Image 1 (cartoon, rainbow, N blue to C red):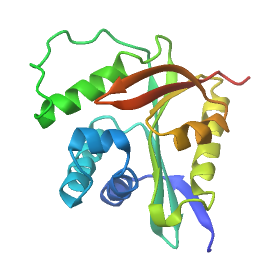
Image 2: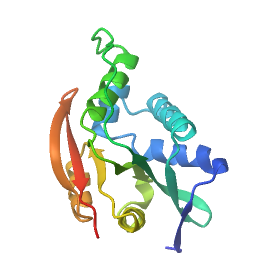
Image 3: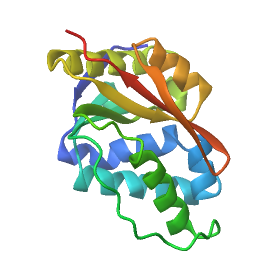
Image 4: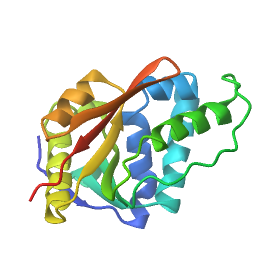
Length: 193
């Protein structure tokens, strides 16, 4: 395997980065529940969601590249802490995509820590490049950046494999919930001094 380089994402990288994330996260249980499948139509919706995120709330995004090709993406965002949630709610209709997406994001938002923190996510590596240490390189960079700020970190995940992975980097489960019958775990990492 040729060397993997970690670098900052540029605006010109958004299209490639969001495609990588949509492929990497297509089979996540929560994405399957919200997007109602894991085919090309659902992948395109996930990609569109990430394009919107990177344009409206870009945060700091790192890319893992191999031979100039993006193979992994990691976004971190400084959050001031949980804000009051909008109390207006859509009528519950699990058959409506906009309801499912809104409900999912609201469920995650209400569990956001009260204090300022670095929020990790999304993070993903192409399935063809997993188990090669690329996710670990991205997480090492994340931890380095967060530790330089002596700040806590926080994330959400929906798979047991991810929980184990994040625990290796000092994250602990602080809350759990079910969203459309999918277990969501909320994990925190204390500030490192």
